[in-house]
Image 1: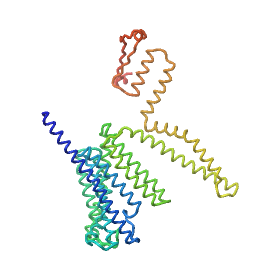
Image 2 (image 1 turned 90 degrees about the vertical axis):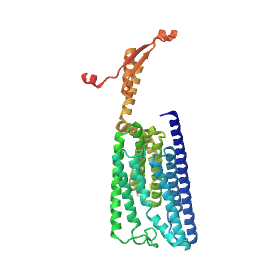
Image 3 (image 1 turned 90 degrees about the horizontal axis):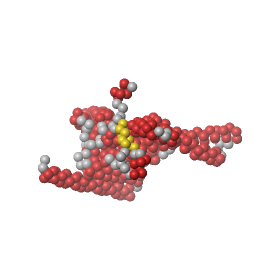
Image 4 (image 1 turned 135 degrees about the vertical axis):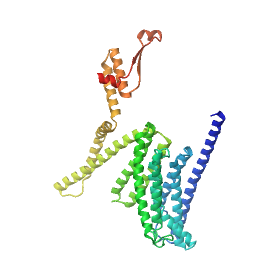
Length: 443
């Protein structure tokens, strides 16, 4: 390949990246504009008919969550698409933001038509129909295809490509079965589905599509496991970021289930915010931003998550026990303030000892190599204070380096006191070859 050909290809790549960046950020602005238009139409409808049922873009909390969703998916997708135009995941995220914006605009126009009775009836019915089934691709497309295409935007191997087509066909069938169902729309019962078909085949297509889409999602998760087993160190770290984001989302949803007993609105807000973490962690992994910090993040999450759960359980148990004792001896049902203060002080006193023990347990259980290396260095440090023989110390040092870092070759350079005084470079080098498995077996 000549230098002129290389320069021509570089110029084409730069032009393609600029075009991809321009298109991606244009989609971001268009998505936000569509969403703001839907919010404006919905708020106008509410001002005309205050008793109109609130939609996702009418409710202030719902509007903020929808705006955050559009911005998160669109911006992350635009950054990924700008730097890696051939990565399909960036364009999937941009498309997700566009669909959310279109759905919000359609819902806002429908509410405006219902409130003011002005506008084109067929267009309003079509908008209501569109907004009633777009949640299906919004939920299934990013999740199923993300697991299959992560992190480089392609399946693990060509043999997995039919799975992508199965996922697309399953999602299309599920959405078609829901979109062509005859009768009133679920969210807007006052509007009859203008494209509904009273045919049992529609229901069969929807059920089959749901089964295929669900099976494809499970198979996509399996493909991610297969990819991780074959991946190198860098790609393993990328998959760890995605797995951590998924674990955070699942854990938050479980916690929000308990919060829903107290407030359903707070629970929905927490779930919506947690779901936004998935594109964020995906973008970090694809862009390789601070990629190797994930091990520290996982370690701290395990330690402080377990510590928080344990302290909360101890506090609740202590308060309940103290209240039972006070009620048994005094007959009072209210808990004295001194008992709450005492429980808080106990929790504060137990914080650091529990943290140290939990950290040690997690290091032994999940980070055994680092734990063994730290213990080896600790033993060597203690021996270093007492050892005076230079040869023994050199062998110990080589053993520590070999055990903790596992290099292919170890060399120790020793400089004598005479050489240090006269500045000579006549040093003595001691080479240590690593012990092979064959020599270990012979020993």
